[in-house]
Length: 217
Image (cartoon, rainbow, N blue to C red; front, top):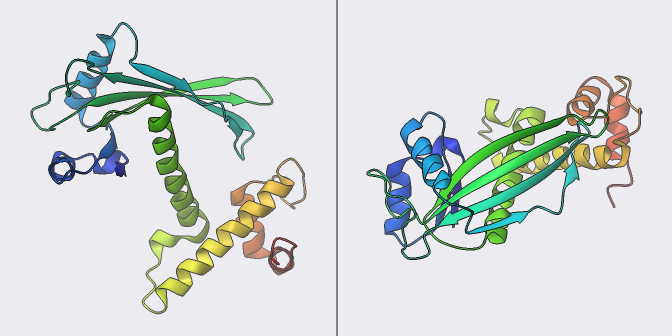
């Protein structure tokens, strides 16, 4: 199964995947105005979702915000297609994901909504699992880029070794964050991934502390 963020939601790619008998889940882009608008209007015609699930495994981000998600799936029970579009074939499921961020300190709540489509039918729970799997990969690549500047560096020599070192670095930062998230142990006073990187960049003693920590057996 293929999953795509907004950048790759293109008709040629998705139609080719579908024609080859593979599955996809694709996020609807804001710059694909007519596609997204039609999906939202189609969803609004339903009295209720075909299936829905609330993510029970909410978690705290490094910015001390609790994250929870609600997934609603809309499908045509009497036919394969839930929506026709002249450029995209075989749209069988429309998915609405409502993400709620709650600031653990102030109680402030921020709600955002994303829409996706898929060329197959399954339960809301399974869609949630597949979406979370994709977002975990995206989050990991985001950290690789932000913390190790992966996108700005081309490794012509030993690229696999460099990739391993980058992953090793991000994992060290994450382990330190997990242990010290609510503690003021850095000179900057904060314990975020960005501050861990900043301290490791300018403090050799801190870098040595990370490497010699009990995280590594």
